[in-house]
Amino acid sequence: MNIDNNRLISIPLVALSLLWMGATQADVNASRIESPEPVYFYASQPGKKTLDQDSNGGNPFASALVELLARHDLTFGEFSSELIDRTVEKSRGFQRPDVSATTISDVLRLCALRFLPKPFSRRRVALVLAYSDYSRANLSSLPDAKVDMERIADAFRSVGFDEVRTVLDPGHGEIESILKDFAALSGKSDLAALYATGHGMEVEGNIYLIPSSYPFLPKNIMLDKRTLPLARLGETLQANRANLVLYGGGRENPFEADPKNGP
Image (cartoon, rainbow, N blue to C red; front, top):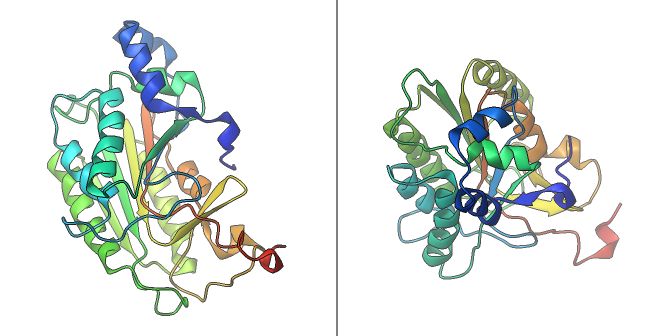
């Protein structure tokens, strides 16, 4: 599955407008389907980079997320809007997050979602994945990606997620097993969240997380095999009420500047 940006719907405006029109819990229940498509939160806009460190010691997007996870008073629409505003503030305008979904039903389903208080009998799980040590990949290492992994995992635990798994710098051969195991776990859950960060890029509307386990080749070829497509991470989430992908990496295209690096 590729993420087609032409089909994605901006969450904050749509979600807030639905809340304003009076979307009820019955509306949310009526729109529910099994294993809904994930909603994607991006730390930056297309073509833009992200910061590895802010005054809190990590990506401004991660810092904003940690703060907002603990808020009892936020609906999903408010959470989305504040995540954007706080990231912009913490990055001093360098980063402006993007939030998107595939269908209106995905938006409607999440309008009444709150992280706190935790609904009784609802099972929630999270996977936090970070690539930090790029010493073998010919790229600069991101020491604060590890910091973000730890504090976001702690934030999920603090709001009552039933199981939170952390993965740091997995080998390319390990990641498929990790994702397969989490897919099985999320399939038995009501809400699944996946936070992923590291070096990343966006090429022709598709976002790729760059593994740290082998050298990065500056050529726009075989990206599905040389990187971890964000859509692949989204496919991992199989919860029956809501699935959230939170992506902390960059979205610049490293191949645009030099046409010789094209396919």
